[in-house]
Image 1 (cartoon, rainbow, N blue to C red):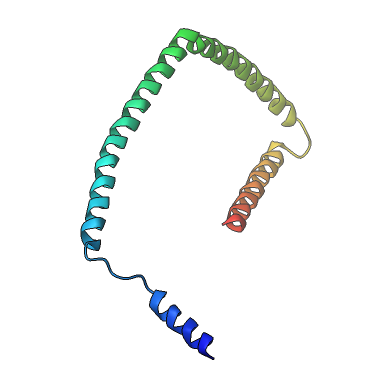
Image 2 (image 1 turned 180 degrees about the horizontal axis):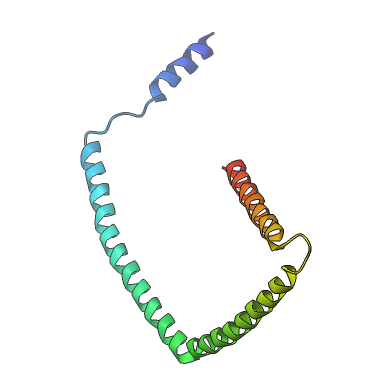
Amino acid sequence: MAELDFEMKLDRMFNEPPVMADAEAFARLVELRLDRGWNLRQVGIGAAGLVAGLVGVSQLLGSGLLFDAGEATQRNAVAFTSSVNGLVQTSENISALPFGGEVLWLAAALGVMALAFAVTRAVEEFQ
């Protein structure tokens, strides 16, 4: 029994740490150090981001990627124009079918609506 009483007394003594006289001053000192370091970190991170951005822009301009992208855009525009012309010719052939082109356009619209409903349902399930 004596051991149980001793254990309970120890628990009560060491359950809460003693309050230090300078606890508030210590907390203020720590907060001042953290605030001072944060301003320096912000400046450092901003400077590093600026330097990295300048290096990235110089690499992009030096690589000629913008000129290649312009040429690729022209090639894609030509390919798109030819595919649209082919689609127009196909739609002219579709209008010669016995049920008319309106039915095909209606089917395409219903397909787009079904896809939109599927996407909204998937988004709702993932939220």
